[in-house]
Length: 263
Ligand SMILES: Cc1cc2nc3c(=O)[nH]c(=O)nc-3n(C[C@H](O)[C@H](O)[C@H](O)COP(=O)(O)O)c2cc1C
Image (cartoon, rainbow, N blue to C red; front, side, top):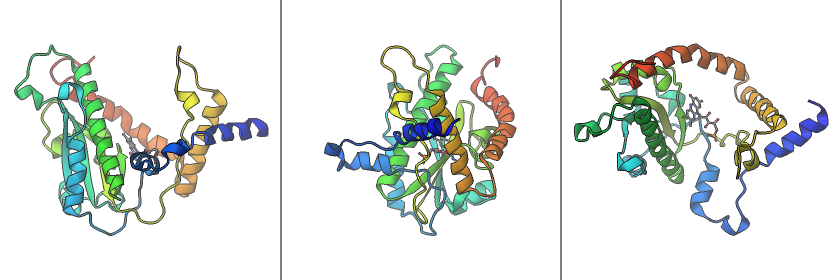
């Protein structure tokens, strides 16, 4: 990429920075949403029980398809996490919630739908993710930071089978992510490159994103990763995911199609 194109693509990526109309700049919820970052450095400071209870309550009250509430939360303090997984909460967080998609609970009283594992799985993932985001934003509003994880060494959906055994999950309960909570240590990380609205919206027909913008996004991701983790690299992180994904794919197939033949 030539220097001019590089500069113009950086400018377009910068257009992805938060943009709130001046008339709304004092809106508290918008400010919480704009301020939120995935935080991976936590202070040695406990989260009070009432604050954690409010975070869980925000998850409980999330919207869901037909109000099915297809989620289950496994909740941990530092010591209960250690007891379960024989290691500390990632990033020395003080509390953690493993969010699961749960199509099992509703089946206790409602068994009217035809066998439709993909639809059930998709609904469970959608709803549980909304509950997760509610918790994440409630935490942020209360001054508690968080990060969602699919890879924690032993506790995201990439370790679904291990979690199924460890937490004794019945069929129809699928781990999706771990949310780690804590008070932040040090400054918030800078915002990673977010694509501008023009690249992700369309009004009539699907519009391809511009290649130069996507290239700029990728190069900023690589540079940002290097700045945050000088001893590692974005590529090394991708390789780590790659090494786990085939196993996770097989495990998830068994968990999603537990009642019938996996395709
Ligand atoms: C479902 C989900 C899974 C994630 N898994 C991981 C993870 O395994 N490890 C990690 O360091 N960050 C993880 N993240 C955090 C993302 O890296 C982060 O959201 C993204 O870089 C954007 O940064 P921001 O949250 O500060 O806007 C995950 C986020 C989501 C929503």
